[in-house]
Length: 408
Image 1 (cartoon, rainbow, N blue to C red):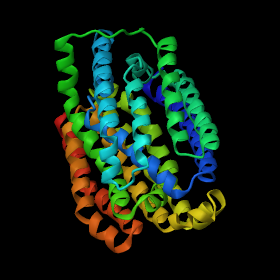
Image 2: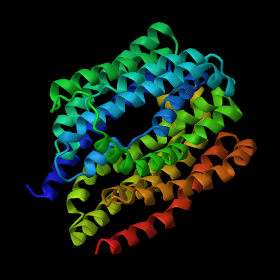
Image 3: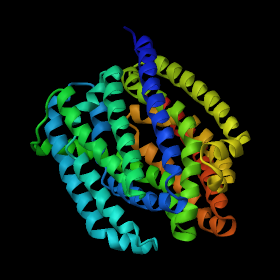
Image 4: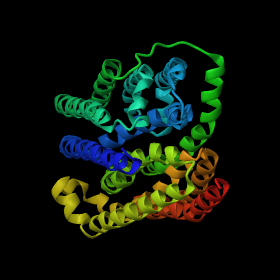
């Protein structure tokens, strides 16, 4: 089967995966939005933000390095697992011990217990069998579908049930814990080889050495995606953060799906085509066109029908999210159109270019987010994300053009 047919098959499976998980996520969000107030969503947002921040700050780029290698990766898996476990223990300790200080910084003391509970999620994630990366590397998207949907369904079901019982955002954390426990179990039942931790210094150096640029890119991407949440939470409080995060979820969920589906499928394909510049360029241009058109159509629907979407789906209590939803939809369209370029740079082992692009977006966003947020509230924060992503456009395409020349 050629790469084109494999890609089509992969798109089908990944589309089914993303569609299924997003339907589940949407239902979960709608149900829990009827149970929790915006301020309670904001408390969970702070706990999840800190978990994600520490995971990004310590990101080793293991999965990307394993995907980029064209030869067999079995000999790297035990060391990769050891690195993951050490990283998980460190993150969990930092969250648990730092919880009171984090909650104090955001002036949300009620977040302390949430942060300490969510530290268990990070600890458990370190024990997932790294062999699951072979699903994507070998274009086995069917197996990845059943693996991910099962985990996601359990996460959502536990989260809804626990939130209903407790009336607290802790229910969302319990869902994450249930999902990661199941992920560990399934990763050893259905993924091969059954990896056990061991340490080879030369392999660890290779993984960390190649992954360092992904670490930098990951940190900057996280700050670009989530840094606005931190500013909103700090400046405007948990209620405003709840509105802002809900608007972000609704705006980016459908639009990002288009880009994320194709990115997941095309990354291994781009890697395989990296020695054939003509085919690679053709595949990249087709992907960019499809993503841009679909993202623009979805974004237009969200911008025009923002009020009825929020009113009928979430309820009158959430109407404060409507204006920022429209603004973030613009950000989501532009961001999605750039995603194929980001995937191409990763496939060509140009992580340093990706890091630079993301840094430029961060600088542009943070240069205006605080004054705009102080002046216009969450609307100002939304505008700053648009400024940041627009600043990335010329630099991204400069690196894409230069990379295509370098491959000749």
